[in-house]
Image 1 (cartoon, each protein chain N blue to C red):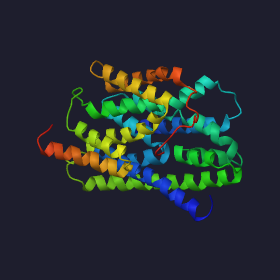
Image 2: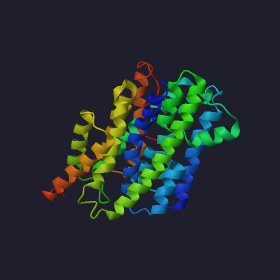
Image 3: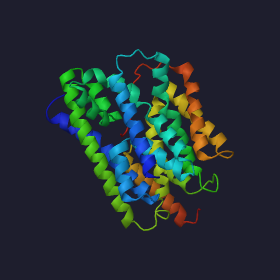
Length: 101
Length: 229
């Protein structure tokens, strides 16, 4: 992370925010709106996968998966994000303490 | 809704982003970002999912361009959100320019949730300012707390990031079109990850949107869900 990256992120994000607010009178194709609506879903799903298994040495199955599974259970039971994060980290820590990589 | 219920609602709305902001602070600090950068990201970028995503791409060895591209694809939803909120906001250009920075999923949801346009305008600003303050403050708190924590790896904190993404993707799974896109995106990422860098597999997952094309327009409510900013 560099300051230039942060500045670029900030400027581009602000531009996207402002774009919708000032361009609400422009007629956008319905198909484009629907695509923008859905876009975060596959990106977030891919990030779950990548962050769960990726390492600088390539994909590996390790204790993070135990944490992710525990997080899934908490989410399924309707737990809040704070609980999800604590349980995911806790389960991963326990799995590592028991000898998992 | 009015009076105390309204304030309680705003408070409840801020709980999710508070936990999320704290987590971002911890994770970003653990990833080696200096405190000033962590706080600057939350102050100026102020878009949780994309902040995590940019961090994730860079942590996985991706380029700055890939990090920005991924973050912007996630933030592309601000355009339709802004389009939906714009008719509810009063005031001139300056107010709109400042209000734009407060546009996040929950503040947009507040504005879109009120049928009365004056109420919608008030809710957007009250909720927006509260969420912004909470986000920056909890990020700072998380980054400071992370310095006290000893071994983030032994504490399993590297599992916090995928867990957050899981929590963020789940609301999308309720509707048919984004669910298809998410499952296709995950499948693409799994397929690409062993043969390409992480940022490429994340980028390739955008093609998952095409899986949703056939299912669009059948779910009723088109508004995007969102846990945090």
